[in-house]
Structure formats: C-alpha cells, structure tokens
Image (cartoon, rainbow, N blue to C red; front, side, top):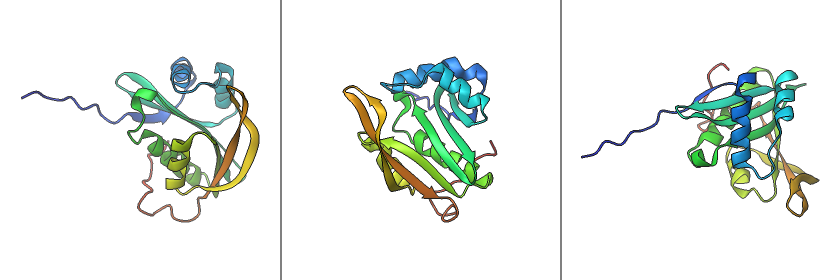
Length: 169
C-alpha cells in the first residue's frame, strides 16, 4: 500500500512588496498578456486590497481589488495553471467579496474577457450578472478584445449556502 501525500490548503494572506517577484512569475505563467511589476507596485502603493495564496511550493495565486464609495472592483484574479480547477479562484473571489462587504461595499464589479468562458461561468456561479460591455478593453493577439462587465449585489445573499466567511484579512 502506498501513501499519497495530500498538500494542505494554501494560505490566503495579504500581499506585501516582498511577494512581487513571485506574483509576477505566477502572472506570466497564467496570462498571455500579464500585468507588469510597476502595475503591481502601484496597486500596493495606492492601497488596493491585494492577496496571495501561499503553498508549500511558494506563491501560487493572487487577487487585487479596489474599494471606494461603496463599491469594490476586482481587478485581477490569477491562479497558477498547475493549481487551477481546484476551487482556489472561487475561494479567492469569495474571500475578496467578504472583505469588501466588511469594508461596507454594497456592489462588486469586474471585467472578464469575452473569450474567458471558464472565468465567466465561475463569476456567474458566484452571483455576478452582466451589466455592460467594454469595447477593445484587453490586449489580444490580433489587436484588442472586448470585456464583459459583471456586477454582484453585496447587500443580499451573503449568508446563503455558497458564501463562506473569510478570515479577517
């Protein structure tokens, strides 16, 4: 009989400046058009709510969100390709929404590439609805790609079955 080692659930914690090189490696592994180091630095500098997933192997994911005037805007969710399809992206979004709700945000907004059907399905499952379209929003191989704007009411349904309160981060 052989024993199978099960890796513990990664730790979700606030991002620091010391994490940025590892964050950039995950970003480059996951996206054809990754954010740059200055963008991540600016997010930390201006007070965005930035989180990382840390596993035994190092950083494996991150999320960036801004909160202002009763709204949160999820700017970036990224899970390393080797760790996708394990529910980490959904858990990251849930934790970010809970953090936003605790900071009195009433609505959550985000954009998703039209071609990113997996992310779109995830956001729909988490209660986001289409509210608009941003033409030519994302860089693409052949020019630009449109983004679907999604929103979710944070004042209702947060205690329903899908929503698991996050640690105070």
